[in-house]
Amino acid sequence: MAVSLELFPDQTEYEKKEKCGLFGIWGTPDASRIVYQGLFALQHRGQESAGMAVSDGQNLSGVNGMGLVSQVFNPRMLTEELAGSAAIGHVRYSTTGSSKLCNAQPLLRQFSLGPVAVAHNGNLINAALLRSEYEQHGHIFQSTTDTEIIVHLLAKPTHADKPDPLLHVLKHLQGAYSLLFLFPDRLEAVRDPWGVRPLVIGKTSQGQWCVASETCAFDAIEAQFIREVEPGEIVRIDDTGLTSRRFAAPADEMAHCVFEHVYFANPASKIFGQTVHTARQRMGQQLAREAPVAADYVMPMPDSGRSAALGFARESNIPFEEGIVPNRFVGRTFILPQQGQRDRAVAMKLNIIPDVIDGKRIVIVEDSVVRGTTTRSKMRAIRRAGAKEIHLRVSCPPIRNPCFYGIDFPTSTELIAHNRTVEQIREFLEVDSLAYLSLDGMLSCMKFEPKRYCTACWSGHYKIPIDQPQSKFSFEREQLKMF
Image (tube, rainbow, N blue to C red; front, side, top):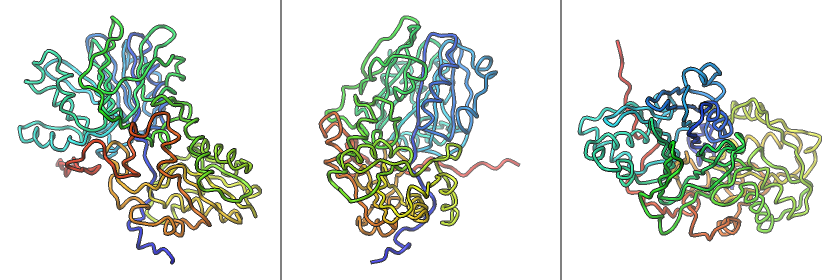
């Protein structure tokens, strides 16, 4: 049957969003410059805002701004306003709270024990409950992001009086969190007990310790990857070196986010003990075994589909061809209300090579399909270029469930695969065939046994219980009007 657009309400343009990226370093007069380089390498993880906080040994200072790393910072700022021997930085895509300056991180706050800067990747699933409790006791929040509750926890007198306030505070948090804390005398890196989001430790050639969301940031500053921050671990870095303590034992079952390997992470990064490019190639090979098709070429949907497309082509013995060229100067996401505008946006973003596509049977390998409107626009552009057949292959299973751990598809209604068959999706996307990688097939491409990974967005199995689901805008309030 034909798929009615009524099946897909509110067709606002949508693409999966990259959450956030963290970088920190201790013990170098070039701290701000090095963090800038690290954030630049992590730009794929967040393009809404960027920020940095630095320590001069006694005080903290910081700069946050909306936009890309290169737009927020400049050479004078790095050498003057952000002078110091230690720094942490953050690139953000909002998964809790609006895209506005007050939510840009690191959050820099002053409390009874002095100044602190906090940068967060993930989502705290109990933040709404904690925030409501603190607001009832008169606490005033300056942002609408879940991260700010951490500072209020630190500032609570009964917490601040503990021998190790941070260790005590972390026991109150539930959900997914990789965190960097900068104090005047130390940097602390934290990873939740389930290990949902990546966080890795490196060392520069000059001997400085650094921490990042992905190892590709270490490549940018010529640092060596040492190890991951362990789930439930606090890593402290100060003038004496690196030390470690635990605030919780690792969870009985890890919850590494497979979507990091499917889409978010840089192909050059090594996360959860596995190189991303290798994992994606294996997914493409497994997809070719599960959903073979006769075609003239295999083509990637730039850019995150490239590794999987290589694997698909090799396994299927179909030539790999580049017929879709991305425009590097167009942003990854368009928020456009009309289908015609979305089609034009895709035309700006992707350049199709008609001489390669015209009259050919094409396998398009895409990393994932979330809402489907962007993908349909892409398929229409390829069809207009003269493709004889379009066979879409997706290197992960259908995303049918919301994520509450830091990916921006928090409601089922946003997901094209929720309560819809693959055939319905195929008709909506206007392709000749559509196949997804199976859940078991995807997990077979991972380094560790399946029980160590979070598959909630595909399987609906949430390892960290969600008692009170919250939306991205749960903490929004009507803005005060100043006259």
